[in-house]
Length: 183
Image (cartoon, rainbow, N blue to C red; front, side, top):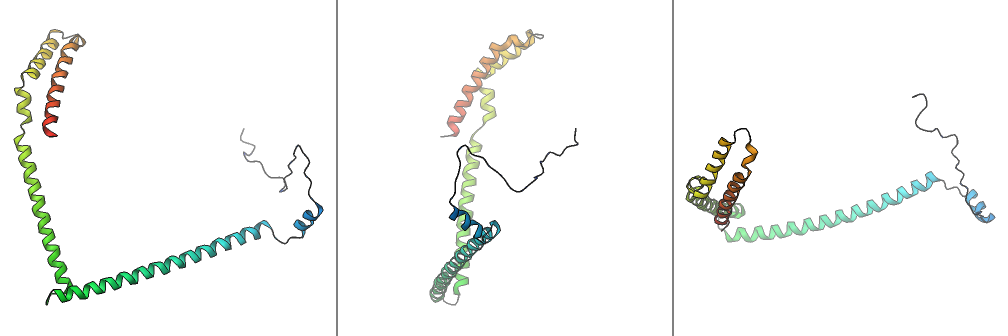
């Protein structure tokens, strides 16, 4: 155990495949293949060079496209800068952008504050805990479960019907609550 290696060592690099039908090549093909200076390594190098040239060409095309897009965007920005500088006297583009940003920020603050206030009002109007304790069906079912568990101290599984009644009452209360919340 453990004395032999798990990988077989190749005894030769030549592989011989035998087929059921004889394969015959013309002598011209065999001579052409033997006379060819191309080997596996030269074919792989040629393929790699071809792929590399295509990648280089694609990168050049993408670079040209990006530079054209960049120059067109710079032209549009410079034209909008000159028009905004003319429309805001003495302020320039930076001043106009700052004023616009401040107004947007104030609008954002106001809308967020309104949203917070409305949520506080909604949450304040809901008194969930009081509704649970004031619901007679849930309170009655809870009392029945407690009474049954006290009576059947050593056999709590005998109270399954009371527990199911309690679950139904709580489910009814939950459905009503979700109906109000999702309105």
